[in-house]
Image (cartoon, rainbow, N blue to C red; front, side, top):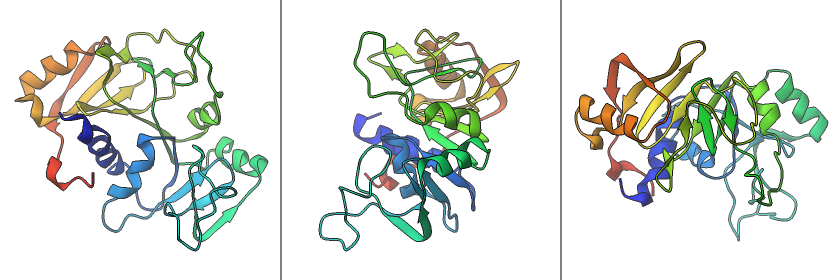
Length: 235
């Protein structure tokens, strides 16, 4: 798949997992694209742990609500508050997260393994800003959806066991990449539920996905192709 399509292709599929009325926290980068692809009739409340409950559309220079110094998302990009949304202090917002009131969190990651462990905050020896709210979100949200490119420079990111320092243990429920859709089943492993039809038929796709996945994939008997063509992406 052409690299220019990968992020939006993943974001569109992730958006199908977000149900009407969900309270959702979106991680930095790719996860923020999900709001572009919400199914018709689906409205979600976006929680930004920096202090917005009910984050609105991204404002741009010239918009009345453009305030890049004071109203930003978790990645420091300009944000807004949707009608009915509110500002909260960090203690209140993290109380919301830790109290189990977030239905789903969408995060990128560096490594995930077949036990549902997640590593997405630091590479030893490299300078990093910190873990942020990921540790709390992974333990507080009902669903933890990993949205990421399947490999990094050709190296597997879906492993038998994470090698990097963990963000959280046994938390991941779903993994969505440009190659397929997987569900982490406790005590069982990673179940491959959908595949990118660009990879060929089901048998060819399974072989291609397994070839770049260290963890052993369990193929769902109801395995099906991911829906949606590239031309319909809002790239």
